[in-house]
Image 1 (cartoon, one colour):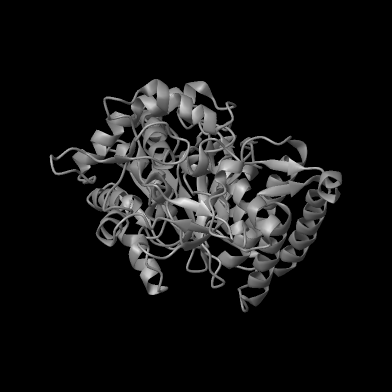
Image 2 (tube, rainbow, N blue to C red):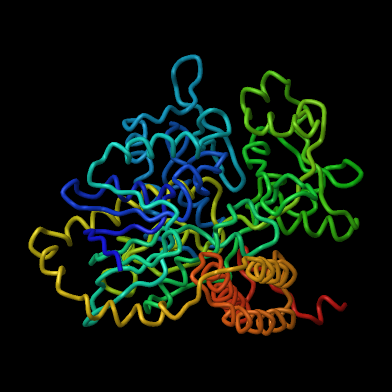
Length: 515
């Protein structure tokens, strides 16, 4: 069995993982595991921007208040305060790295408004390509680092312990198991959007990091908090949906019902700029009452020149569908977007198991409460990615790095015996079938509005699917993805059954639905 030695292994190549790697000491040998390639991550897809108080009329207190309000005020106040207070510094760090945010004719950084924000504090780049611009810059910096190795098309399978200490991770690469020896693991694998039929996430967002952590003994929290974005482009084609950024509504976009009339005044005084959980529920209620599959988004009050410049990515996409933003309404509907819960961590990224850290969407510091405020996600990656790196830098002095490199060959061979019994994969069709079944169950029963009895049915269905999946064990990434989806789905449903409605977890009793 091939063995690779690293001081730190980071699982995930989105913004949180890569930014953590950049903040680690150059003396450390770092490995970054990615299931695909670095140019494919949900961080790249982030359109709207990144939140930070840089305007004189704004304040840290206001950003904190907005974040708490969006999260139903069940957020970890210390985490929120840290996130907001460190934002300006991390923005300047990005600029130093080479990120060019959009500016006005005077050279001042432009800001815009999004749902749940009381001030214009959303910085953006290339109009609606903020995530792409940031990631291109960060990836470029990572590739310059000789101490960072990117392990592409590699899937982390199991964290290995010896004498209660982390000693490495078993990964799958080219249908072969490889052992990466390390004393520190950072899980930065992103969200769970692929558990749903329609999502803004990449198909590989199957919650693998959640399962790695759970099986290693890490605590999980708030697994039922799945945020649905209100405005994804409605189309009958494909499961991955194109996001229409919240910034469109920030620039005056209005949601319209089937009769082309605004309807958000019936639901919230903030109208179209209410928090995402409120807008998503409102849209669903409107669609159910009017028996429609989508609502409309109207931004036609702006000129073609403005829209092409402000939203170049969206404009080009819609144009391919013969929709012109300056004169056509955009069909939109809510879809699975962001995972609020996850692996329990402190403010330094430490999980409940020594040697294992987590940051980004896969983690839960409590910063988002029960629902994330728009454009706080990229900011979370930066602030807590750096905190994680700083703690690891202090942990890994030269002496204790060496002390962790013990002889563990025999122990690893014992761990591998179970995996060696897996046959090769000869047919991917069964896994694709199982994946579709899981997505159907989660979409039907664990979506925006959930019923108590329906959740019990969903749990039973997922348990049955998991039993069937185990009969198709194979040395195949799809097998591990589907099995992980089952485990994560179980955790989401069980937490949803136990919790009362709050934030993006909206549950009704079956009797209410019948009435």
